[in-house]
Structure formats: structure tokens, C-alpha cells
Image (cartoon, rainbow, N blue to C red; front, side):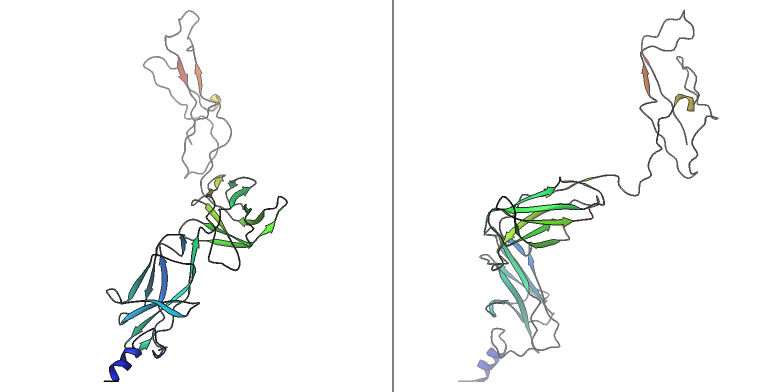
Length: 298
């Protein structure tokens, strides 16, 4: 029996210690889809990306330090995928094999599974209405006796905060998260989870989502002029059928920058009269009411 094929087979397997690590090869990258936080009972796809000359990829569990699965690369041969239907929480990494040896292992991927415990409650103190530019305190609490809470912000940025819990007067455990400054550029929706230090990758069900309501002016807009516009600010003639309203070009107006143009109708200056202004006491009022308004052009 030839010994050389057996040695080559051992040397080209990532699961064997005989595969020599080549420090020249770039480290692979690892990520999970749809993400690293997966509900209990769901599936996940883990990707490992290396170089174009990779011959195979292997996925490892950090605790066991042995390959869970080995896959051939997908075209254009720079990455492979590992579909995991029955997932469990843990820490993973990957390697790839090339003609010159094995790569270093990738950074670790923390895979979190949710749904192990009942959901906590998330609330905003004193209310979910927050002034733009201000901070808000979010309270996560539960009767489960968790040792830590993690607060997550939904969206592309995937921000999270983690705090140890404290007991409150009612016997629950809670944590107070201060978040801010809050602005109106995007939605601010949060959830929180509870877990125990011994099992940091096994989280509770998520709390109900909490969306903040941003109040206050939006920065960058030019505020309109303050104060009502009086009828004395613009002289106008009493309109008769067939006539249009004429504005006195000499009417007084506030001094404003020349490059700013706007118009404002103030409800105090807009009045609805049930009777038209008669030109003489003997004239009868018109059948329809007339509407008068004062306009100021800046």
C-alpha cells in the first residue's frame, strides 16, 4: 500500500493537526445571516471568506476546538457557507486551506440564541416623548432574576448596551440605561433582553418594542416672524363685485434680510364677516358673506 496518498490526505485536511499554518495567508472573515442574534428554533447561515485559491473551508466551535463542518468554496472560490438548522449558542471561527497551507483562524463570531426565558419589560422614564437633542432613561425590569440586561437599538447601526441588574423595592431586577442625545434624523426603537453570566449567549425573549417620540423644532429651519399681522400693516380697498384687492406698496413691514422671501397668513388677521361693509347706510348687504384678510409681502 502506498503511504504517500495517505500522508497527502492528512496534510490537506483542516481537521488534522498536520496542516501547517501559513502566516502569509490573509485571515478569513466570518459573519452570520440574517444576523448573530437568532430566535430559538430558527436557522442561520454562517459565511467564511478567504482567498481565491482556497480549496476548502472549515467551521469550528471555539469550546471544542474541532471542525463542525467542512465545505468546498463557492464560485469565485473566495468564500463558503455553512447552513445550520439546529443551532446552539456559542462562539465560532473558521479557517481555509490553500495549496501553501492553512490560514490563521478568523475573528470569533458570538452566536446568540434568544427565547430561553420570558420577556422582560421595557419603559421610558418619565415618558417616551423626548425633546430633540436630549437624553432619555430606559428601564428594563423582570421577575426572572436575571443578572444582566442588554438593550438593543433596532436599525443598521446595531448599537447595544449591557448593564448588571439591581433589585428594586418590588422584588424585581432592573437596569437603567441612559441614551442620547436623541435627534429626529431617524427612528429610535429599542428592545431589551435578560440573561445570566454563566450563559452569556442564551438570552430571554425580546421585550415589546419601545419607540421614542421626538418633540421640538427640527434644526436648520428658519423660524417665521412672530406676532399677528394687523390690518393697519396693509392698506386695502373695500372690494366690490368685479374689483380686486389692492395692497398699498408703502405699507410698513418689518426689516428682514433681502435674500429671504416668505408669506404668512395669521389667523388673528383673517376674519370672516357675515355682512359686507356697506358704502352707505341705505345699501343692502350682499347675499353672501365676504372674507377679508390682511397680507404682508416681505
